[in-house]
Image 1 (tube, rainbow, N blue to C red):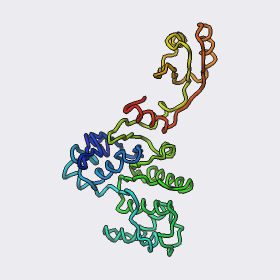
Image 2 (cartoon, rainbow, N blue to C red):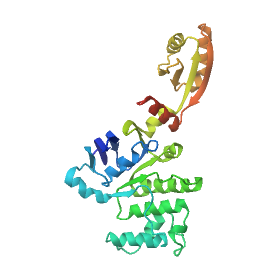
Image 3 (cartoon, helix red, strand yellow):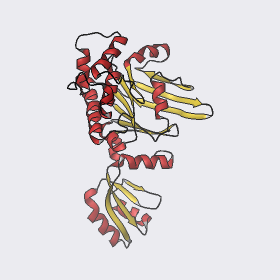
Image 4 (cartoon, rainbow, N blue to C red):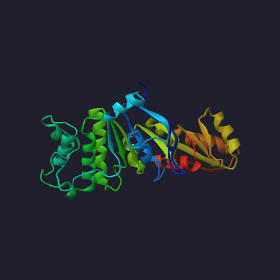
Length: 306
């Protein structure tokens, strides 16, 4: 089984609006997959379909290599937190989890206490109602509710939205703990891209219901890491000069700016060669792109920007 979750041409139409269109998505076991897109891009629609909460208009998806009726049986292995957690505000974290366990027929001794440890709420006042929790605590409790039944996949829609830096850090630590200690595969959407870059192993960019790009964290580092940016008055001649130095990985932007991957310590040699070739050197500096920069570049162009 190459992918624990895969979609093929997944499409959802509401009236005349295509909320998701021909989405091909691939998630491997044990990964944190970050789904990126602005509000209304189709993230929640996709998550609702693969969670079994909404029926696709067309296309298909598989869980654990299963499709159709066999896949339906696998949905019990999917934990979901979409939009706001459904909490009983007058009950404590323990009581909220206990009710969910009873509803699912789960009664082992110590089960709720273990869940509280996993989500970092084990030291919370047992009598304190969930309605008085901070937003970060409520989100962690929502993740705890999604974990009831020991799912192998978690689907989390914007779990850090609206949180303060402390709350975001707590959710981040919880997600990494679930992946590293429990081996749980996690799909998470967010528009806080710098935070997503800290936890995700793979990314998918959604725009206007379409999947524009999928890439791993390693590919992100290659695409968004540091590079040498050079601007001259003759980019064709500069390109030829740089290749004469044995530098091959050179990209050219629309305005003629050259982007060189690697060779970060070669800027003096590159500068000297360009000037000695009689080319006007306008600018040379180290530059780096963030995940947000990359996302904006891809969505502005409507396609791959690698």
